Image 1 (tube, one colour):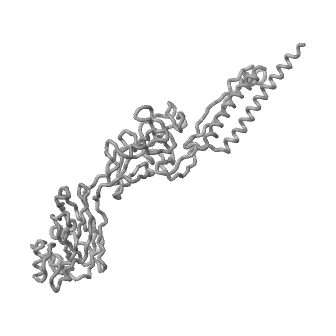
Image 2: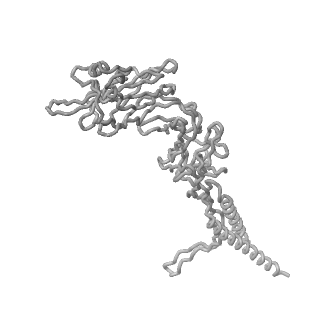
Image 3: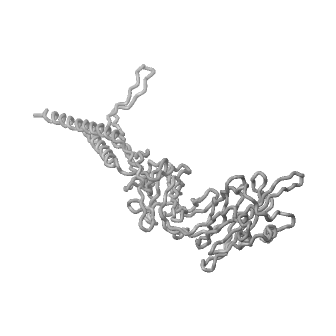
Length: 486
């Protein structure tokens, strides 16, 4: 009789713990990144009243099963359910959720153990640190290099606290330093129908200089500072630039130089090749004006030519250089050294259509101040500056484990590694090596299923109630036994 009472006591205690687990799950139904737990039961070792016996082949007697009385039950395990919770959109740029495996890596300062969380409700403190709501640093990488595929972070470096304003590799990231122009690319069309002004023909032994074009034009016009007669004669309209392209370039200090590239259709001639085939070639003359604050000194003028199909001819880079190096000498007031850049015109064409040449790429830019930032699905934090440029500020790292359910809850929506979870060794890039990708502007909510929890609550309540009935019934039997003696 006493065994039934002890068994019911164990049942009451285990169901009480189960109710505690359910209550905690329901309490955290709206907690960001919360993972629900589940309690399971196991029986306690039974008392064997009679062991099993084998059948006797001689006498024909059959075997018997063991006779055992259970001694109650106990909690078998309280498991953490690591399935992903629903996603809630918040539109906050620092809110993140993980689609797939992995945990954000956080730590209090530079000391203490690493902790892990699925709650991505991060903020930026006044010093630019990316932190959790409780002030712990979020970890990742900040050293990067520019490669063929853009900016690539060095994930072989140890992870460090992410800071959007400064770091040991890039110093002050609130301001992006100026970059001198190294290349300016032109593309578009030059109108094939305009009237040539006459000039350099590309004769053998003749060098493309301003003098040659002046000699070819003759004394009708008055030469301008650019070497092209552009006014004062009855033929002056022939010498106006056929097309003008503005180009802005920058020096190392970020000073802007508004250059002007003037194009003249120069000469059209028939050319007989080595095979005896005759083709038509058209040359164009260009002059670069450095403006009021600079002088374009090196290769500031030259020629390019096109074939009869409107394609740029690229077989003569001496007299018809389509990608010259232009040297700019700033005025002394600009405080900058001379610099040079490549003027790439290999994407130009010449068809019977309006001229449409424009710059499609100029790689220099002035300094800029950080305005805002965004976080990509790969964890890269990109800063946007008021000069229109973008620069990476860091990349968020994720941690993965062989057994995520083996992690230990430590409060504040965070987990610590245990001997059964697997060791955290290195951070992983989101979307690589089994780590999930990030969804910016969203939060992973609790994975608690209320319908399931209420069902479990009813079952647990009935189990507790039934065990209490065993207790009261056993007590009544003992009372009856005591009443047998009067």
